[in-house]
Amino acid sequence: MNLVDRELALKTLKSGLPIIFPTDTLPAIGCLPKFSNIIYKFKKRDKNKPLILMGSEQEQLIDYVHESAKEDYKNIASNYWPGALTMVIPSSEKKTLILTSKDLTLGLRIPNSQMAQSLMKETGPLLTSSANISGFKGSMTAEGIALDFPSAKILGPCPWEKSSGKASTIILWKKKGDWCIIREGEVLVRELN
Image 1 (tube, rainbow, N blue to C red):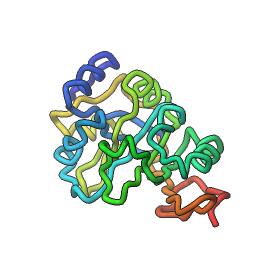
Image 2 (cartoon, helix red, strand yellow):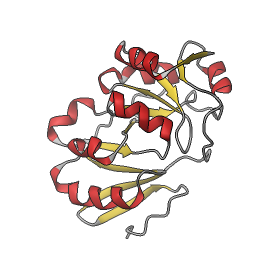
Image 3 (cartoon, rainbow, N blue to C red):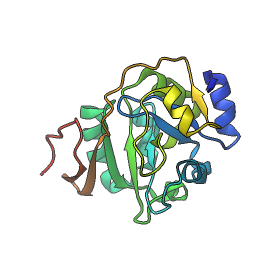
Image 4 (cartoon, rainbow, N blue to C red):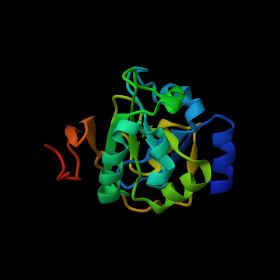
């Protein structure tokens, strides 16, 4: 198992390779946004499936949100983050270069995980996906994930903090004050119409 500390994780990310790390839901594989293709290669993931941009705090992600959705973003973020909620929201014009979706939207999330947050405080936001081979159920432990991704670096120390094992709730912003649910998870969002 390629266990690394935060310092080596930063070097790995800057070199264009991904890092596997724990979150409050499922373990994640993440990279710096400009290297997003690496996630697709590691996971054998369909390029039509977008990635999620994770950050350490909502201020770190606000510049990625289109002006029309910022007020709703702030409202939902302050009520549900950090936590198991992903917002799919229109991307700001100046941040479209990092998009992995075809419809100019971006999934955003702040995990309720000390380890993940402290990593992203130093790296900035990371494009992420669950740490599993696409189409297969992934492991919840670093040791199990190392079997699927033998060449990937895994953030230590281990064992990781406990996570729920459930995917995040995903909501989609349609227009001001109007959200719809894409995937149900453990977070129930009162603001859904």
